[in-house]
Length: 119
Image 1 (cartoon, one colour):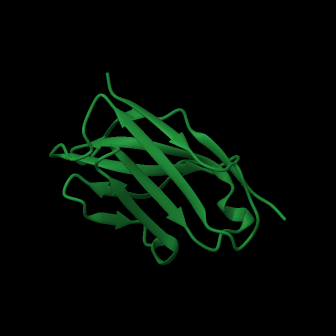
Image 2 (cartoon, one colour):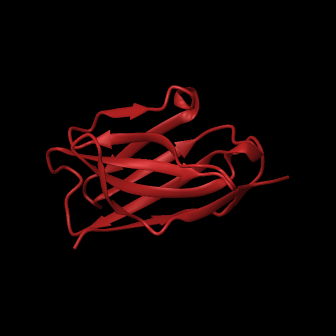
């Protein structure tokens, strides 16, 4: 059974850098054809794709967040990490790490972690 677990601070001040780590068990993040993704859901809004890191190690980002986003990985720990710089209250959301199978199937989700940006 594949499991994903997000970890990181839940409260940030504007202009700080958000850093979240996803620890994966039951699968390797280097397995071909999977893309290890970050998705968020702001309060009262729909899901927003942030980006992913492929099994190859290449990363891809949402154009609207690309300038502030970085996704990296530690294969020795089977973890991947999201960094989002210069956060504002608009970055307040529940953040999920998700496995994308192929191009369309998000098959395993973490439980989600609330991140609040407030002064």
